[in-house]
Image 1 (cartoon, helix red, strand yellow):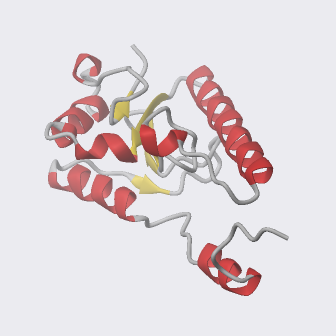
Image 2: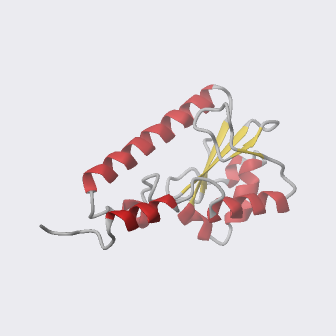
Length: 154
């Protein structure tokens, strides 16, 4: 029997329990940038499709902060395929992508602007400026390419 995981099932379970869904380092960075720019927001997006990480109700703007691996981004980190339990993970990431697309479509259909921040794009030197411009509605300043740090339609 070939063992592909370096952890015992109990250790793996403990590692996975520590993976956070909110207040992640990328999310805290985005929040810090918006606060510094004087942009207010609410957390959690309860009641909205996909439960956005940040919501600016007055601006009708929802912000999702996505980890590249967990949301299947098309960057090197997002394209990485787990060796252990590969079928499970490819299915899970595929479901995450479908859920993200459905949430985005539902929000846009309801008149919301959706900004997706990808973890890899946060390393760009102009990330903070592009994020603030995107939230303020200066859409030309936010790249709509899939590999950018923040993307918004239009």
